[in-house]
Image (cartoon, rainbow, N blue to C red; front, side, top):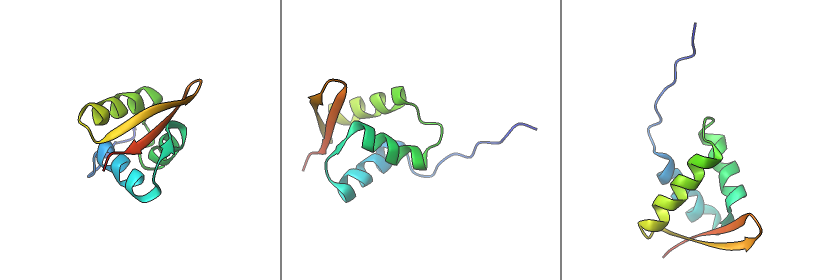
Length: 76
């Protein structure tokens, strides 16, 4: 019998904003790890889409740290 997926009551963008409020600025890998605990089926591409939507809406700011790493910070 296939496993039944249950919809989450909180969307991933809301959880990401909560994590950033609680923990402060994070690298994209750290944020991905935190979100992966809540959303098991979240992929890295989904994280990139999520970060793009939040940045375009003015909620977060991303900046390059090193090759392939980004810093994600909450805009006040």
